[in-house]
Image 1 (cartoon, rainbow, N blue to C red):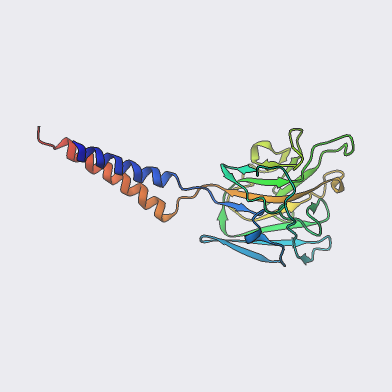
Image 2 (image 1 turned 30 degrees about the horizontal axis):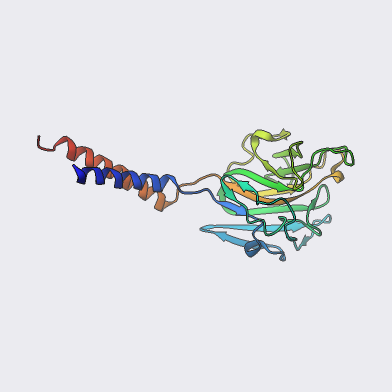
Length: 237
């Protein structure tokens, strides 16, 4: 009986290990990976290459910035994974992307599904800034497919916002974050008062995609359980 119990535990452990594979978090506050550099700048996450390109108001490629982090402590959490918060995230020229003037492009070497995009320095309306700051995210440079996110009242002094399809102020496509190879962060040209806003790119969280090793573990777990069931069924009374 003890050997059967051990078998069940081992099979269960294989399935748990397979299901525990964590989502990929592209943490732009990690100074080791994303220190200020010329563009394009590419970092590998397993088999996925992520390339960052920064553009100025004239459409010219320029270096991005990644200044030391000065926000809240302890550091911020995205999808159960804490950000490094060694820097304030990606900006252009200063520590932010100026809305309507500058543009960030994030390229993926293969199509990905995005769970969320985390921004910093995106603030709600206040007595000094009577219009809330906005950030636009599009899957094409012409912004045919885009979403607009607004700084919210519950932001703290870091202007932290995790942008998902559920909390967009405006959204042209429910598939904006599906099958993405390019992501553009900047300004939608038709939104009023774009120069009020700026923000920094802190992180992109990708949807879980089972890797071959994960699928193998899961399959081994299922086969083990089927084998144990068969052994129990045919065990002599």
